Length: 378
Length: 193
Image 1: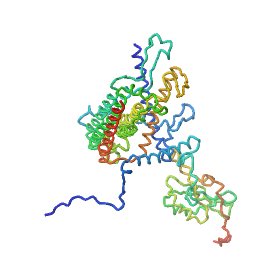
Image 2: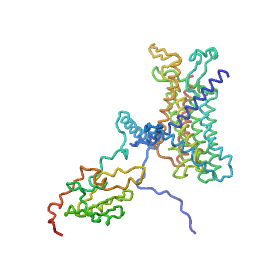
Image 3: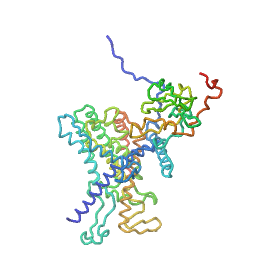
Image 4: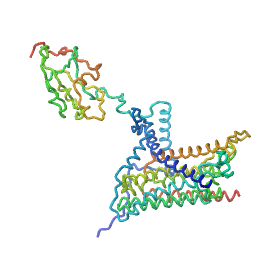
């Protein structure tokens, strides 16, 4: 086993653990946050009893997610009589897998020097360093949008192969909505590409490590505040959650494109939705919030303006970067949940009108202004 | 020849008038998020400082404090000063009960010539009780009353909802005080029919 391969395996394990944990925890966070926002307590009855004792672990209802998962796994896997069994079986996977794969190009930490962390393995690693990113691709941002395109196929396939009018309507809605908002998303990001001059996500994050005007962190949101808002809006729309949950729209379409799915297949749509919250938060963090960067944190430690420095070891720096990234992602997830429990659902014509008549012109205007500014300054 | 009139959307008198500020949508969204986020932060701060940040009562463990004084909650059987039930087992409450949840067995007590008839068994099936209060209205002896607290019944066993005389007599003794019998000024004299 080569060191590169070992490091990649560790990264993949970390990414899967983080994503699935976020998927599970966010169900709990969503319940609790919604409850607290509306003066309620939230789910708090499920418990684990320690065997042979009467000690019941409630832990603020954290085990409700476990109970849900068990229920989804143990329920009958009902299959409709459909003319496309393959498409029906593929649907959840095509919706779930691209969402997880997006994380492959997202840098979740700075540069890792395993030889410095584990001196006993220093010879094996031979002084090589690795960016904390599963796939350090030059075309990182393009990969993100490519996988976003595959997710559309998942929703369309699920709806089309269910032989159900509601599913079909949901799939059509999902298709047109995702394509519209994908466009907005792409155009908003173009401004960032102009500023950073690259589509490599790791290079983008490294660009955001300095400060602007001496005190502001050089994050994308400082350069492109409008693009940040538009990107987050389009991201929530990509995720098909309220206020953009027309493809699911319980009051109109039962569950939209996954009406005919039950048990864990339906659970995979739900899980992919919750993981996509985290993915959108991670993308937003990477593009606009400086990724793993804290202001004044460099690979050697904190370097404050005025010359004061605070030396940190390599392990501490890596830990701080990873935790910073996770904290930013979690805060953004919480913000998305706040939006989901605040805003009412759009009407269908409003939804498309919002994308094509409002967000798209704004993002094009943003792009033009950015292009002119970049051209004038260079 | 009938010609179709073009569709004209009806204008309502209370249609909202939106200027550019409302139409631009983001400001109003921001206002909404500030409200919900503010409530979230306020409640979260309460939870984190060890207070309760919700209006909800944990139902079986916690009984809400603001029941109205006239709320028809659980029944109590009033007692004579010697602790025996005021009830004379006349069966009027069981007769009037629309849900037919009251069961009374009468017994004879030769030691008490004033009240020779007493209930040896007085049971209420709370799984069917509709809390209408007609038993209280019907009782000629002020033997059954309803207090504002709801019965503490949630459980995993339906049999627990069938309450016996002991519980009806004893589940809140401090409020369980009989009027003097015969009631003062009731106009009835001892030994009268």
